Length: 78
Image (cartoon, rainbow, N blue to C red; front, side, top):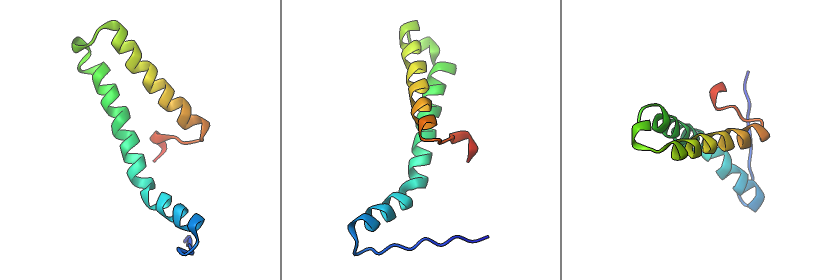
């Protein structure tokens, strides 16, 4: 199976979409790294943080995954 996407780079909207598609993989890995860093902070570095800080970190992860879910994006799927 093949897919081909064409863009007219003289068209501003196509140019913007081209840029977004080309950065999609970088965005995915950046989100993956953010989540992993937050997870590591809770799992391995929890002694460095208060209970309240751990709760905030976990809430941030929940917010990130909630937003991704709204956009039907599953980081674990890729």
